[in-house]
Image 1 (cartoon, rainbow, N blue to C red):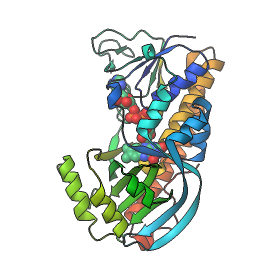
Image 2: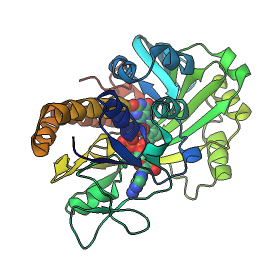
Image 3: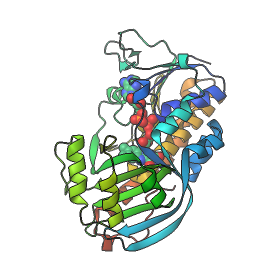
Image 4: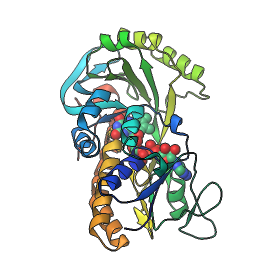
Length: 358
Ligand SMILES: Cc1cc2nc3c(=O)[nH]c(=O)nc-3n(C[C@H](O)[C@H](O)[C@H](O)COP(=O)(O)OP(=O)(O)OC[C@H]3O[C@@H](n4cnc5c(N)ncnc54)[C@H](O)[C@@H]3O)c2cc1C
């Protein structure tokens, strides 16, 4: 097998490494951040994603680090139940825990942290490290996230646009709040549309809460931690007491504002010896809850074709043919969910689960 470089140690890069390990294929990962900084917030992972994760992580360890959600409960912002739906094995886990689980099977010498990889101006298709030396690899698997610099360099005509939705996300460690809520996925919706508050229990003492808002209607402006805290406390004052009490009892050191981007049209998933996986190949908006599952499926499919095909471009072409049609369905579903979110509540389809299924 050829020498493989993986760029980015997020969920895509690490899951790719786990599949390569399973097939005893050698590789090296380059990650621009420090190991301690790879935290983030959390994920909803549908059933299928758990099946893929169980191929590379011991299932009992997964279950120890997150929790299955029982029901999706949709509320109005004042707390009236609008719809309830049993969830079919939807799992919630913090990004920090999932990254740790995916890293444990990779020997430390196979990952270089604080190593930013950039495209080489002089020689197209070659990649270089922070010190200017070339990456020595026959195949480069790019998993550097939705704003992939390497992708933008290769496909200069691509159009990225900001989605009409931002998210404020926070993780809090508070056993009292965690004990007060069931393992349900609760989501409160403003009657006028374009504003929600969601609550997920990630473990016995950890809660993830998030607000999705229409960025044409709500403008946070400058956003320090204190700005985000004040914004949340102000906007949600009149909401259901559960929402306001969680906001009042929360600490805010983990709060973050996410601006969401999408590609107007997908690029090819590969060019020459460079292949893209996860958000670098296909940014998916958070409404789909399919980012992690898609990253896992990309890694599994790419590994399978690299193992089965002698010619690398054949493997890449089969990988793209297998994955692109499904990703396009999620992009379409994500746009539908976004449009619903922007509508007043009485015009939204009832019981819409914020997960895209193919
Ligand atoms: C607010 C929000 C909520 C979400 N909720 C969910 C959810 O509930 N369920 C779900 O499945 N998905 C969700 N997603 C999507 C999910 O986070 C991603 O799809 C998933 O994490 C896959 O990411 P990735 O590994 O492809 O990219 P990333 O997580 O972005 O990782 C890319 C990595 O590459 C590194 N990197 C970047 N550039 C370079 C470089 N030049 N050189 C070296 N390293 C580099 C970065 O530091 C990073 O570690 C959500 C996303 C957002 C923004």
